[in-house]
Length: 286
Image 1 (tube, helix red, strand yellow):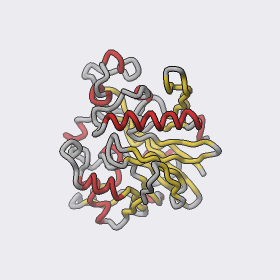
Image 2 (cartoon, one colour):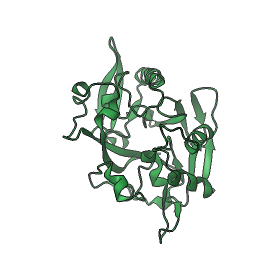
Image 3 (cartoon, helix red, strand yellow):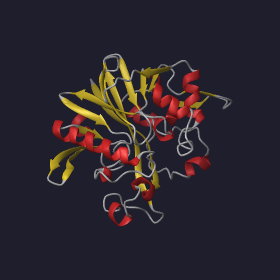
Image 4 (cartoon, helix red, strand yellow):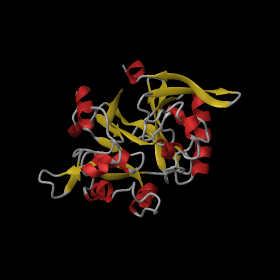
C-alpha cells in the first residue's frame, strides 16, 4: 500500500467563522488572519494505492462553479487536483473509488464536472464508485436551511444519476471495520450528520483523515469549534472522544484544511490533549 497527499487547491475563509465563539485575539496566534480577517486553508485530499484499487478521499471544490462563486473563497496558490495527481504519476481516470467524508461543496465539488460543451454535468472520475452513507445522503439531499448553501445539487444529484453511487453500511458502533474499502470509519455528527472519518492502517501506523472534525492544528482545544457546525456541543464531545483515542493509540492525524501543517500527533497532558509532533507527508509516506 502507498499513500499520497493530493492538494486540490487552497482557499481562504473568515477566521471568525472557522473558530466560532473563540475571540480573534486567541485564534490568530495559530491561524493568523489577513487584513480582511481571512485565514489560509487547504483542501488536502488523500490517495490510497492498494493493489488494483486507487481510492481518493475527498476531492476539493472542483472547477465548475462561477467566477463569482470562487471569488467568495479567495483561491490562492498553484495547486490543482489534476496537477497533484500527475505529480505522483496518476490521472483521474485511474481512480477506482472516491470516498466522500461528507457532501459539503469543499469536500465533494470535484466529483462532478461540466461535459465538453457545458450543457450538462458528468462524473469527473468516470471509472470510480462514489462512497457515501444513506443517512448523510438523505441529510444532504433534503438540506436544512443552515447547511443548504453548502449542499449544492450540482455536486450531489449527478453522482446518483450516474449509477456510480454506493453506500457504506452503518453499524451501531461509532467505529466499524469495512473490509471492502480496507479501513475503519469513525462517524461524527456535530459538524454535519454522519460525517465519516477514515482510519487507515499504513505500515503499522494509523492514519486518521480528519476532514472537518479537526480542520487545523489551531482547532485542537476542545471549545474551538467552527461556526459552521450544526451541533457544536456534540462536536466538542466527539473531538474529546476522538482526540483521547488518538493520544492513547498514537494516531497520525492527516489535516485536510490546515494549509501549513499536514500531519500531527497528539499527547495526553494534565491540561488535556495537546499537540505532540508535526510531520510532512514526505516524512511518513515515502
